[in-house]
Amino acid sequence: MSMRFTGKARRGMVALAAVAGLALGSAACGGGGSDDDKKPQNSSSASTASGSQPDPQEGQSEEPLAEVKGPGGLLLQITSAARDSGGFVTVSGVLKNDGSEVAVIPLELSGNETEIMNNGRSLGGATLVDSKSKKRYYVLRDTEGRPLTTTGFSTLKAGESIDVFLQFPSPPADTTDVSFQLPLFPSAVIKVSG
Image 1 (cartoon, rainbow, N blue to C red):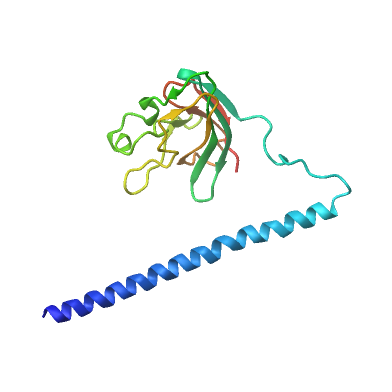
Image 2 (cartoon, helix red, strand yellow):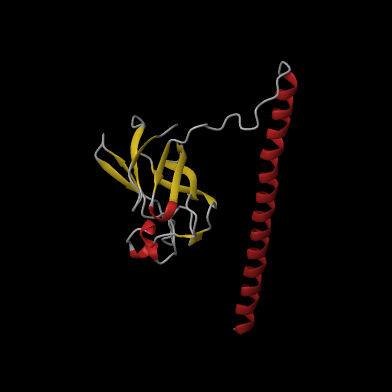
């Protein structure tokens, strides 16, 4: 009886290893193609341009959607809020220590829900408020309760900045203006694109 169990276990392990290998192989093959596809388009469009070279920051927004100051010299610049066809909104930006001393990231930014707080410091306390529909949207979580936002930071040195993101359920398609709220920071109205 134990030999039969051992044989089944071995076959299961071999099948698992094969599936894992195929998954890694397809991920590696799939990821490189999109980057390569973009490079020729950029070079061909540059060669057909009428003598002027594109600005290196072309396509990037000059002004952030919003800029809010928090405690200890923290500055949050929201650079985009993009609606996805998957039914969520991704808010992206930069969190910077604009002060002259090391800034400790306040625990309040993680929110006060035990499930989120158990996963370390994050921006899990943020919300989007759609005043038109009178709804509040909280940061999404994965199946293990981790917030779908930047995590794992506790301090920022003077002048240091980190790129941040937060994912929320998407408000209705006709809603373009929402209020972004993060504990200890003032609210800011941002435009949702897409």
